[in-house]
Image (cartoon, rainbow, N blue to C red; front, side):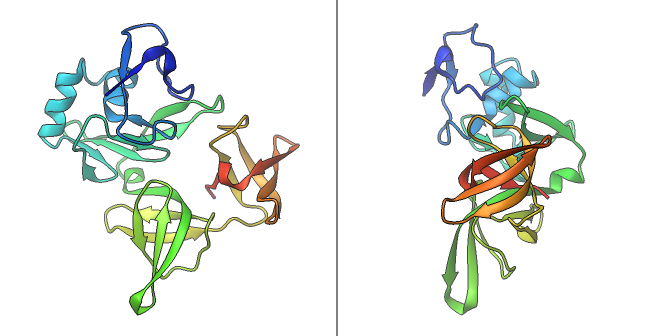
Length: 215
């Protein structure tokens, strides 16, 4: 249920000093942050856990356009958090220092999110199921491959467009020593599962599994 504050992942933007324990997310400890930590410790919207649980009970907190059911649910990269009473919207991003950050966005921006395709499965009736990095599975006939990204319409629960991993694509590195940096694809080495990027005029090799297409 809890995690020692000194042992929270380095990409969480929380102080190492303070209460001994921090809530442990139900899943994705390295890839996301619990809603409780975001609302109380990062945004300062709630004073304590009780306030967060009350807001969740009243369905005042949405994650990707769905009511949050547990304060330990983790928001993942590019997930959208909506505070219903105040009509405030936030997106979980990653800074150039490799730490998660929560950015306020407008309502229009909150209706869509980018996710990476980590798997595909053909279903009956010529339907294709895309398995996304945020844990959702979505049916779509759009042409795309594993490691491409998709722009998802959260209201209609459908893929709006594919963002292919090809030369000249703009990508975000979300893991490894270059986490938080953005670059442009020069060359893709499928055999080695690596991509050569240009980052601030420097050439860098990054594993495909550590990056996501964003444009």
